[in-house]
Length: 260
Length: 226
Image (cartoon, rainbow over all chains, first blue to last red; front, side):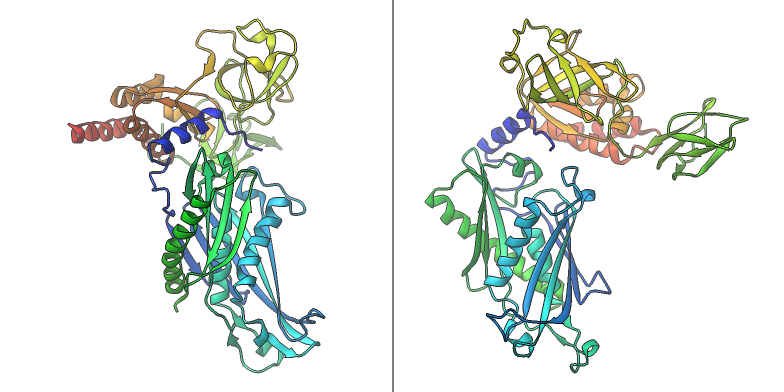
C-alpha cells in the first residue's frame, strides 16, 4: 500500500478549514466528466468514462442461458469488475480482492435495484432460455472515485447495447430494453467536511464514504456506506441533495453522449 | 551535441557496436552489439551509450538526498518508503536523537516525512538511509507532491538553475528529493505556481532551453500580478 504522509493529510485538512480543496473545486463539485461510447467493436455495448484522471472501460456481452429457478421468466444480469495492476501501484494481479468485489457489487446494485434493465422482456422460453447480460468493468486509471466512474461507464454501455438476436437466430437485433438510468454519486467525509467526487488523496484520508444512486424522479435507488466512520443526519440529508443535483447534470450528459 | 531532438529508443533496439562505444546504463550487450534494455531517451554523448528511462521507480544511489515516508517503527529501527524497489532501513544509530530500545515510536511514526540521505546500497538494491548529516531532519508542515524520479535533474536544472529560478519568483521554500518527492512551503498562490510550473517542466522535459522558457513564463506571471 502507498503510505499517505501525515503532512499531506494536514495540508488537505487545512485547505478544507478554509473551504478549499486541493484541485480548486467546490465541496459539491464533480471533476470534468467525459463519456465515449462504442469503443469496443466486439462487445454488444461499450463505453469509456473519464472522471478527471480516473478512467474506466465497461463492456456488455450477451448470451442465451438458463434463468434462476426463482425467477423463471426474467433475464439475468452479472457484473464483474477488474482492477488491473496497470491502473494503480496499489492494485495487484490475482483473484479479485475486497475492493474489486465491493466495486462490482455497488455497480450491480445501482443497476439491479433501479430496474434499469427490463429483465422481464429478456425472456425467450420461460424457465428454459433467457438472455444473460454480462457487465464487465475494467479500471484503466485510478485517481479516486471508482464507484461513480464504473457505474456511469456501465450505464453508458447499456444505453448503447444491441441485443444480438440475429446471432442466436431469434429474429432481428434490437436495442436492450431500458428504463430511466440511476446516477450514482459518491461523497466522503474527512475532518468534519463532506466532499463530493473524492480525488485519490481525499479518498485515502477519508473517514467514511457514502454512494447514493438517484434517478430522474428524484428517488433514491441504492445506497452504499463504506469505511469505519459515521455521518450525522444533517450530513446525510445534504449529501442526498447534492447527489440529486449532480445526478441530474450527469444524466443529461449521459443521454447526450449516448445519442439519446 | 545534436540540438535537433532527443531520440527515444525501445527495448532491444540496436544502439551501436561494442568496438566504438562502452555500454552504459539501461543497455545490454549481445554478440558484441549494444542494445537498449528499456524504453527511454538515448544519450550518446560520452564514451558510454546510456538510455535514460522515460518512467520508473527511483534507483537509489549512495549519498543521494531523498524524502522518505515512515512506514513502520520497529524496536530499534524504522522502515521508510523512499519510492525505491525496497523499503529503506533507518537504524536508531543513524538518527540524531538518543532513542531507547523499543521507544522508536516516540520519535518517528507511520506517515511521518523525513529528509534523509542514502547511506548504503548493496548489490541487491537493499538500502539504508541516515539522518546523521547536515540538512537532514523530520519534515513538519508544508506539502509533498510526486514527480517522475528520472525528471528530477530537469527540475533542479544545471547547477540548480531551474530550482533557484522557482525560489526567486515564488518565494516558496522548496526541497527536491532525488527520489521524485518535492516538499513545498509558502503562500497558497506561490505553492500553486510552483506546482503548475513543475508539472510543465515535467511535461516538457524533453525540450531544449527549458530554463529560459520557464524564466520568461515566470517573469510574465510576475508582471501580471503587479
